[in-house]
Length: 422
Image (cartoon, rainbow, N blue to C red; front, side):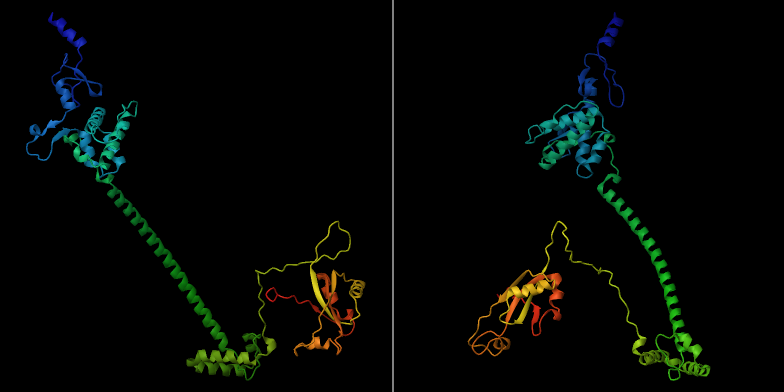
């Protein structure tokens, strides 16, 4: 009968799933095993060990002051001590090391702590399911803690602590923002040092090239100075700037050349002054035909060729020619506009308009109007008349030809009055 009772208990009653570190110490497998948090079947002792409740301060430590109650919760203890000191992403990834039941218990405890607080945490009370429920619960816990921190009510929460410190993850200093900044500064320092070394190498190469180029220029200057000293004296040979120095030496008297070289070699202290005076004498002795003006080409200016149509054939369309206005002066008073128009058309000059200029006679005239005084007789009659003739611009050269007009007639471009004078 005893054997049947034991078999009944094993078959019907659930067995306690024990502690996180191992099986149930008492091996409980009876009616005291209850369904607990995290879908676990635990006895009363294992349930308290896994999910401890708030402990009165008098039972825990009578030496701690100014604390109403303590609550053992590893997750919230870790979050309270690390929040604001490390990046949020690092804290969330580290909280994944806790068990699912610990994370669920922390969420329930935090919701219970802020139940009567003026916070909108309704969106974080949902039961998360699926493969990412652990990550979602961690996000809910961190978001609620951030909301609590923004409203400055962290001090109103229970004091979260841990009995087993081995359950609290340790964050390395490499995960802090300060360590990241230190690492970045060291990398930048290494890059700057590398660039500095490369720049020094390039500068050294450029310096060597410049020294070589400078030495070569000095040698060329010395060679040119030596060729200048071998020039014969100007008193014996006429020298022009277009004649080469070597040709002068070959065509001159050897004795003169030797004397000039000896005189120059004796005056070693006056080398630059001798060269300057020699060049000055060469310029003074040169004639105006010995110099050539340099021809400079302006690459920016391009010659634009413009033509003016002059065809008399019917092309099916017409152009609008530019006009030129002229003043034909000193014509006989009897000359009419028709006569001038016919005269110009006979000479192949189309006339666009022709008007006679009317000048009112003046009784009293200033002495400066010499031409107008000469235009009137004593009785006030006009001696000559003027006309305003408008022709195409292409006929400007023809109308200004002296052979076109009788003797005494003057023709000039029309002078328009400016808008300011009007």
